Length: 508
Image 1 (cartoon, rainbow, N blue to C red):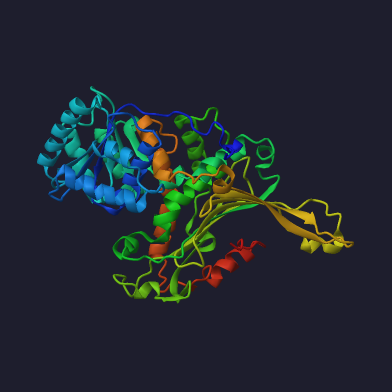
Image 2: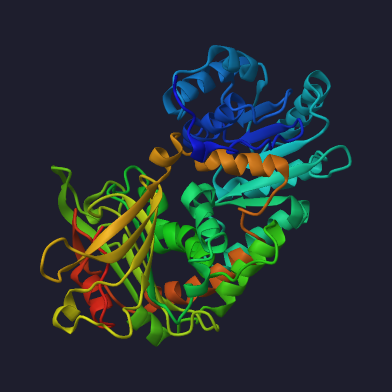
């Protein structure tokens, strides 16, 4: 008989929301097929959605409910993390799938949505509770939000009404403020859930547990013991078919402004008074306000950008960024960015935070690395240079887990010190695959828990830090960006970027 894994004891805690309907605008898109539908199906399979849970897809195709159910079945079969599909669960889940076809800018579409929602309330007991998900380009946000308000679907007189907004939350500070103003005309801030899927990843959440639930870490989580912090988001893929988007965004807007700044704030925040949406998000905003803004001279020194050249990835020849289909051959869009931030507060004064992200790098990996200072008195002067700093590394993808590197004596008669690792991995420790990020975030939104979502002032504080960098790069007169060979860890300039501080990037 298989013995239960003691590490999984108490793992399942009932968090079932009220009966509700999730309305997905853009339900024929890739996000719905790959992430949203599989996440909702997996929640149903885990018994985490209530009886009567319903999903209303909205898109331009002239589908029937059965057409929509058939397409969503394909998504679950292809992308669900749990296979094969449980037929009994699917049949129950599919009974709650419905479709409305129409143009996003046509008021008649929203009148149909209102009518279908009223029918679903009566048929399935969803009590007027609605979660709207904007899985559509930002250019359609204005139409969707204003029309939802016109048909009276934004108020909460008969059940709750919430909206999830996908990134990008603007492309600079001004546009972010305009987007927030648009949303706030129809929804109260308490109804708005700005989603960043990185916050749904297990290791990101476990960062808070590692810090605040373990007495061995929090006392040394400061400038007295930490030398610097490195945050890396590396991708081996190129831009694929996303040239139109990427030419407008680039690495800074695509990864750093949202994902990586979230990782930074969670690493650097003070202990919240209580683990709830107000306290956690307020502490994150304090970190953003404490980061030293960059002047034009600071950008020249502490911000680096580059583009990938042709090279080899996993044995395959790949083209340069400028040779990708749809890319302007004179483009200055960065595919690699490295930044150095300083946080001017009591905990982190003098501790640099280094961020790097890039496409077509050596491999796909996301990691937060806390590098500690070396001991103040080394008792082994003859091997002083051989002793490496302790590092606590939180691996977010792939193979989510935590590694602690420390020094140990190698067996034998001589005093030989060698770095060793203590590893914790979710899959092997708990014997179960970690839930997908969207599973956690969709469940939280249905529960009304906004802790892992981004607040308005947080979005604007992020852009206030990024906009001066973008403006400097747009006006600095540089015609050609540094290049790096695909399949490497970035340009030579990125190594020099660290070496001038007497440090180096971690080998991943």
